[in-house]
Image (cartoon, rainbow, N blue to C red; front, side, top):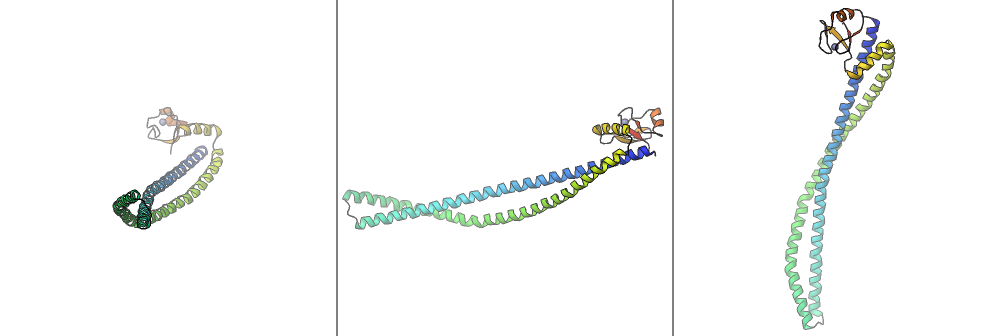
Length: 231
Ligand SMILES: [Zn+2]
């Protein structure tokens, strides 16, 4: 194997290592993004449950206050009926108001009680859901932290490989390097072996002249232009 080919193969293998490192990093970044999305989604789901519960609590408090207010009104009216100096007409109006309020308060109390029961039933469920969400979230965040640590290592390794590449590229003949770089923009495998007279890049048979020349030097495939060599 010529030194020229040796240097180019080294560079090619190095580029493969860089690509592999990039793929690993991209894979980790995708995984990280999907975990972060999962947290956001679960949080959204839990938040809407919690919001609905808080709405129920508010509704329950309002209903209880309504009962209290009506109860206070009944007491005040009853007291007024007992002690107040009122005209007959005013007394009648007040009595009617108290009657209506008494009829209404029973229904209100039932509603308030039903709401309190609902709140009491749901409170432990919401607490449990929150605990579960927080526990799950802590675990996912731990996974993300591990991915971040890995990403830091992989990125440092990628930087090292990129720096090393310059040295490897400078070992290759400039004309050959330029052709290699042009082909690299088109193919993942710009440099391929010829096996049994066939270019392993495009799978087509090379000419006899090419098959002969490739024994001594790096030549281009006349079909796909990839650089050819023999093992
Ligand atoms: Zn070819």
